[in-house]
Image 1 (cartoon, rainbow, N blue to C red):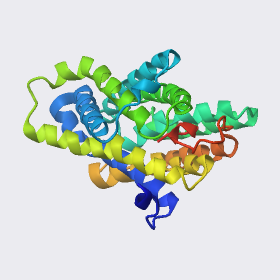
Image 2: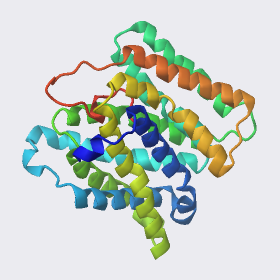
Image 3: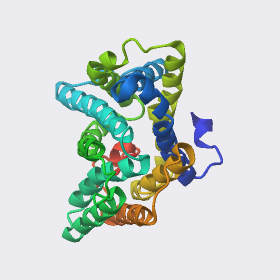
Image 4: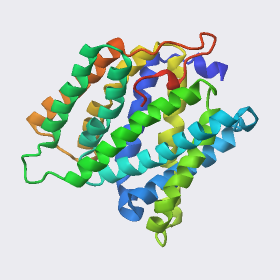
Length: 299
């Protein structure tokens, strides 16, 4: 681990790589979604991720207190619902559009937690960007896709609050080794019936590869990045996520945005970066190294 921290990669490079891994995993999930559905894909990806995490980290079950049980369950269930919702969204609308819509959730949390009324303008700016992105005046507007992305944004907001609470109790990959299995079990309720009869060795192998892209690799990279940069700087980089979603949607899925949609993405990115100016969380435990739980915007 010590040698990994000393790799000659700037922290912003680690953070951007984490974002790319998340968006690449989403873009490459499209074939799996066609084969086993969005819930089936979420279940397989989370299950494979849970297996990998349990293989490399022992869950700190002895450290779990009674007051931790509900937040851990809540975080796992929220993660599972968020995964299903996002995959259901990108099945119906472009990747960049789905990312921008769900980004409203953490952006609103960041603005509200800044305790600055002026910061509330940034979710409104991002909402304007989302309107330009979705172009509801067009005939190909997909209300179901937008609704799934919006529900994912709400779940993402709850995910941040729960992650911060869990992050105050557990550090490193230990918390993830407890919550991802719960997320996989949550997704299994809908995912197993959806995927039943379609499972092959190729699909299982693809799910294992996608699990490395999300959640295993991004979380590890985020931990390394946060040891060498401030949470606010990291959160500002996270504002690039909708733009990278559009870029990968264009390169991999051939989803060509219009000029007005490009303007919408720019507004969302601007709002996300500006919200970080007042969005830093006050550290409650100065002796603990920052983790992804310390962020107002979590990738």
